[in-house]
Image 1 (cartoon, one colour):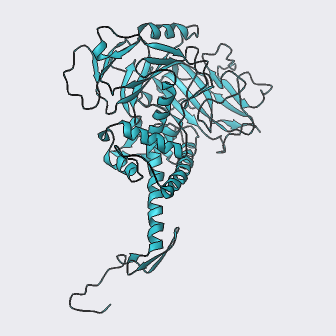
Image 2 (cartoon, rainbow, N blue to C red):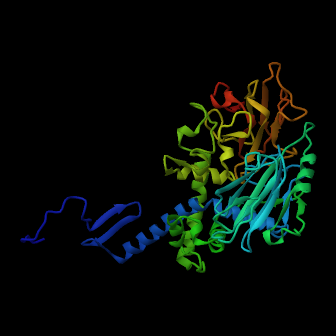
Length: 477
C-alpha cells in the first residue's frame, strides 16, 4: 500500500490474509472481503453453530412439550390428573422416574384465565413452566407445608383484582407442568396416599369456584407411556410449538434470539428451506450426541461427591444452574438430558427431610456399564437416611427405568426381601444372571448399557459431610 500523510501503521491481527486455513477449509478474501464460496461456508457454519447451542439451551422445552402431548392423550388440561396408583413400572418411559413413591401429574393451561389448585396433604411436589423453570413447590416444601392448601395461578401479565385466601402464583408462561409424589405407608402400600390425593385434590377455573367441576383421575400404572422427548428434527418442531404458545417475554432475549436466528420466532411460521432443514437435522444429531457426552462424561470435577469417585450430583450450580451469577450451560444440559422437573428442594441440604441424589454412569475403572457383565455395589451399613434409600438402574438410551424381566430394576431398603450382610451392609449385584452368592440382584441385558441413581429420603449429616461414603460400582469380570 502506498504511504501518504494519512497512513497509520496497522498492528498485527487486524487485517486478514487472502487465505486462512481452518477446520472449515481454506477461507479466501479479497483485501478482507470474503468471496462467495467462503461466505456460504461461513453462513452455513454460523447457522450450524447456533443450532447446536440452541438445541442444548432448548432441552427443557421439548421435554415439557412431549409431556404435554402425552397428558392430553388421557384428557383435557386442567381437568385430568394422571396418577400411578400402583407405582411407576418400567413400561412408563419417564426420565429417571422411580418406583419408590406414587406420582401424580397433570397439565395446567392458563390461556383461558386464572386456575385454582386445591392440593392434598402429605405430598412432595413442584410446578415448572414451559421452559422447565421452577415456579413453586407444592406440599411438604411448599407454602402449604404439607397440610394442603389453595393455590391460585394467574396468567402472564394478569392485572385484575386478586381475591384473598390463596397462595398466589404468577408464572411467566401459560402452560405449567405439575408433579408430586405420594408416599408408601408403614406396610409399603401406596394406596392410602393415592386415595387421599383423589379425595382432596381439586382443580378448576377461578370463575367456577362457586361450583367447581370434578377432576378426573386416570390410573397410568398399567399404561405404556412416553414422556421422553424425541431427538432429531422433531425436537425443533416441539420447540417451535412452545415459542408460539408462550409470550415472548417468557424467556430472555438472548435465548429467544438464538431460536429466532434459526427461524423459530413467536408470531411467525416455522418453515425452514431445504438448506436450513438439513442444517437443523444435523445440528440436532450433534446436539443430542453432545448432551450424551455431557451427561455420561461430565467434565467438572466439583460435580463429583468424592475425589476419584464416579458418583456425582446432577445439580451443580443449584436448581438455576448458576455460579456467582454465571450460567453453567453444561450443567443445565446434562441435567435436562437425564432428568425432568426442577426445584430448590431437590438440591438444598435439609437434614432429615427432603431427598438427595447421586448418579453413577461409569464403573470403578471408568468404563461404561455393559449389560452382559456382572457388577457389585457395596452399600455400607448405617446409610444416613431417616426414611429409606434406593438404587435404580436406567437405560442409557431412554434415560428411563431399565426394561427387564423383573418388575422393577431396583433395590430399596423398603423391600421386604432385602437381604443385608451380617454387618447390616448391603451388596447389590447387577448382571444378566443372578450370581450364586447374590441375594440382592438387578437384572441387566447383554448389549445394553445402563446407569444408576442412588436416592436417600430424609438424608442425615453423614451424607452431607461425607463421613459416610458410597463406594463405586465394581466390575466382577
